[in-house]
Length: 213
Image (cartoon, rainbow, N blue to C red; front, side, top):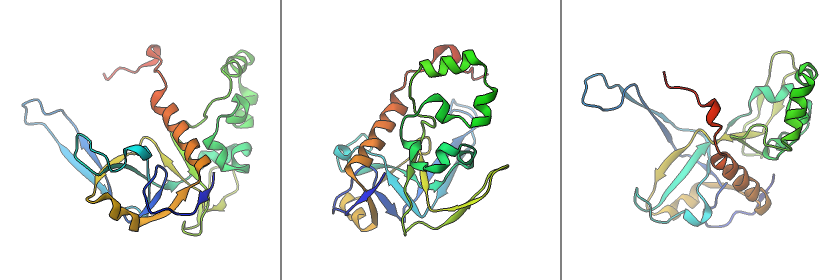
């Protein structure tokens, strides 16, 4: 994963500064009753990444013009430290890997042989399908990452979570160029696009869907 010179246009994967995101929480659907509880959580993060496809940025949508999907850059998941293969290079989260590479060594040793074989038969896959890691940059504050049973480390790696998305509308969208701080290289943007497509395009296992009861 790497960056390239910034261009005066918005692209998927761009890092922007100074935006806000929101999450809506509702306890009951609005079905003509008086038990509805609606709340909004507004977050002003330091940096956000654009997840809208490049060709869709600035185009019309059902919400109007100039709508983009964003997600905040957050600190790495501490569980990454349990896996030496991942800790050696956090960028490996962005790529498919073998079953043994994706699992901490002590967990792999405890696994039954038939389960190991089943996992190996599935071939290389994304271990953390909803995460995408951004390389360190002088813009990013350093922080300490720690997990029980591992040595804490200092890092400037950050990541995004495909499950944590917001939509913002800005007119004109070109003015957001002033907030643009980083641009992914073509190869890194392709990695992001492929992983994003895999996450939203993976067919569900109907046998394991959890009931809402």
